[in-house]
Image 1 (cartoon, rainbow, N blue to C red):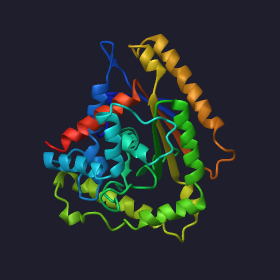
Image 2 (image 1 turned 90 degrees about the vertical axis):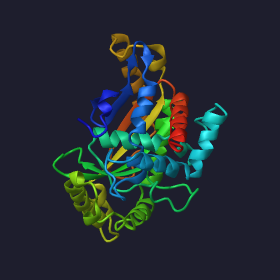
Image 3 (image 1 turned 180 degrees about the vertical axis):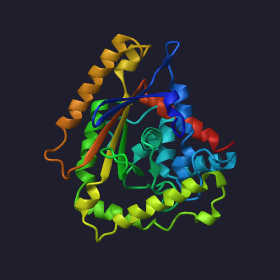
Image 4 (image 1 turned 135 degrees about the horizontal axis):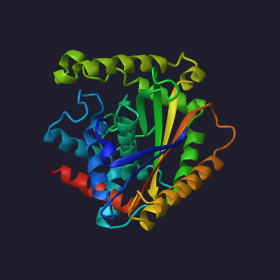
Length: 325
């Protein structure tokens, strides 16, 4: 069983090595959008705080849940996007050039949930927790986690994730290839690793960790994060660091398959979904510049949904409500 029990809502399928699919199905012919929103809601505290205050999984109070929602909306992009989706009943178009505005669409939150539940990951740091100041956008990778190595699950890997939430899946994966080109070069990586390394002392001390049932788990986490902070030292060779880094690339997008069917168990649904997925994966690889800047362990994660607009709108309504409970 996973940490947040996502397998009860989200189906996970590994099509082949390097290509994983996730989707919520139907119930009595209705797409399970409300259930998916509630599932994403369960990871808000974990996403906002990480391990920095000693809050693990679902061991938190209503007060902490409320503060987590508030901390997300202290970032200007989330407030701007809420106005678009909720107040104006509109959405952000795929062609928009302001890539930071897209952070308010919750792509990072969905990636966080999938990494935690389907890859047994631990968040090395929370970008929300470490925002520079109220209202400032948090830059860098969309996820920085520690998880088992995809080639050897007896070892652990640093997972540096990117996420996109688009109406068109092909446009989303094309944007992911641009992230690979921009982010996986020596200058960007050294700069990011230096910023990550500055956070190595920002964790609650073990003797002040209040949840005794989770104390042993937290101690194990502290040992793992210390190993990875040591590896990110500027004196280490970049090629040695990257040989044990995994790159999860998530694209959540509006799917024709989920609008043309109402039963995920039917053969017609399965055939249409496979055809859609194969086309999007091909588009991803066709847009990858050859050769890839470095030898990366890339996992393409595709999450088709019935409506990106409705998903984002419902998430904003939910978080807005959580701020006042």
